[in-house]
Amino acid sequence: MDAVRTHSTPLHVRYHETDQMGVVHHANYVNWFELGRTEFMRAHGLDYAEMERRGVLLAVADVGLTYLKPARFGELVTVESRLSSVERVRVLFEYEVKRGADLLCRGHTLLACVGRDLKPQRIPEADRAKMVALASAPLAPRRR
Amino acid sequence: MDAVRTHSTPLHVRYHETDQMGVVHHANYVNWFELGRTEFMRAHGLDYAEMERRGVLLAVADVGLTYLKPARFGELVTVESRLSSVERVRVLFEYEVKRGADLLCRGHTLLACVGRDLKPQRIPEADRAKMVALASAPLAPRRR
Amino acid sequence: MDAVRTHSTPLHVRYHETDQMGVVHHANYVNWFELGRTEFMRAHGLDYAEMERRGVLLAVADVGLTYLKPARFGELVTVESRLSSVERVRVLFEYEVKRGADLLCRGHTLLACVGRDLKPQRIPEADRAKMVALASAPLAPRRR
Amino acid sequence: MDAVRTHSTPLHVRYHETDQMGVVHHANYVNWFELGRTEFMRAHGLDYAEMERRGVLLAVADVGLTYLKPARFGELVTVESRLSSVERVRVLFEYEVKRGADLLCRGHTLLACVGRDLKPQRIPEADRAKMVALASAPLAPRRR
Image 1 (cartoon, rainbow over the protein chains, first blue to last red):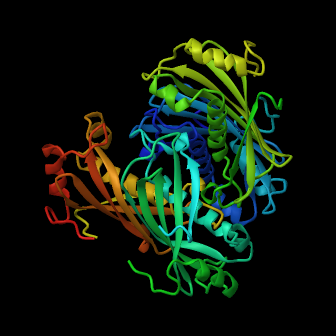
Image 2: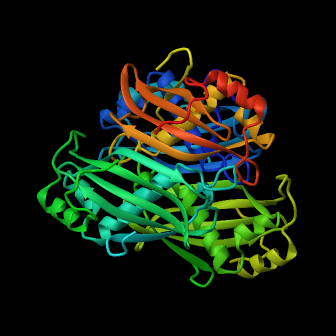
Image 3: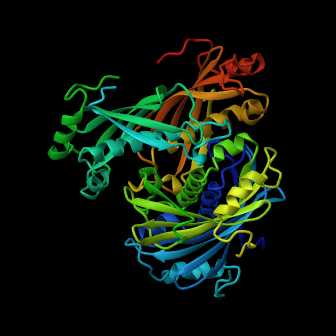
């Protein structure tokens, strides 16, 4: 990933994140993506806790994950997060979870801006401007 | 437990509830207690979802669990829940998790009634009357 | 979905599955898919707990989820699971989560058969024969 | 707590740890205790991942938690962990979760040393010696 626009969040695998296969249960990567995205945003002046208090919620509309290698308890992994594109209502983030140079998982989440009533609304212009400045490919339509 | 005042909630152990020890991770029993309590209440005319919509929240103030035997993926276990005592603000539930006749875990949760601001408030009289009628030892002070 | 080859798993939304948006957190649907798949398999003579004891593990290789409407605490939802296609090593399941007639979420999981060492292995013939008989589109290549 | 024998683990509250009450769901503190304990042990030459590979498992036998104030998404909290006492088979840890000077939750976990078959075994002498050196009240019988 492009180092400039990518945020790297290190985390230690927690015991409760493992399952009886002896590796991290796949659902936890969804939470790790969320953590990576939140830290990415906070590092760039978009504090999601504060956005929610203003009534600007980002609801998850689509998630995809491809698993390449397992992670294990106690290992240090990093979540690399990237804001790929911004539309009027939606934002696309992409992620890579790595252990050192090993790619363990990659994926994306598409978020839709909603109000407290969970109805779609435009991303407020001030937030959107920050997102556009951070996006790897600003204004481009989402590719699947 | 007293069959009359006890509610039994069956559940199958879900895969993601296991950890790399090959058994159910201990934190999940806290969620199972919550499930047992919720179903106990619903079965007796206390719909917790509806209570929250009325601004009557039950926040957990204290939890204790003793683990006797492990549960495994796919097993059918039952959560036996009992409302032990009711005070003006607080309610004590007790639980046993069983697999057939085997006792796997027992414990309690002490709940405090709070408003939407999370400040303590008296349990509304109509709700409290239902709870008192269900309690194993109505009006008795909580024993620890 | 085709009623014949679809398995329907009802579940009540658990309180701990909600988040501060007031709805079910999106990661839980990954676990619901897993639950639906496990019950689908069990209903058709493929007991996954027993398969793992034989050293036949199904590791998740790819997951996708599209969220359409939120689910809320206490609601009864159903997970409709379908085995879409079977290859030598991999199996594709598809899911719909519904509340009554409302479609809340749809998605898929691609599983790869692995041994206890987590290395890919062919699905044992007896298991594979059962899967092929259940598949909506037996032997067809996976479409993405 | 005694600063010398206490380990402090900082963590940011993750979004998925909240529930619809708008605060951290109480079950997550059990996982935070586990994280604090694991980091405490690692900081003092007791790598739990490595212990498990040697067949030395610590199974949770008893957990207790008292909740005083809620934690919220995005907040920085610290888990202060202390090894209170060590017996031949069992170890008692105590915890405080704080946000700055505010005490949010305190509790304990009693762990029993077991083998891969989950049967109790004595803590190996080398591990036990390290634990005794770290304990706040070495060799004292456990008080409840």
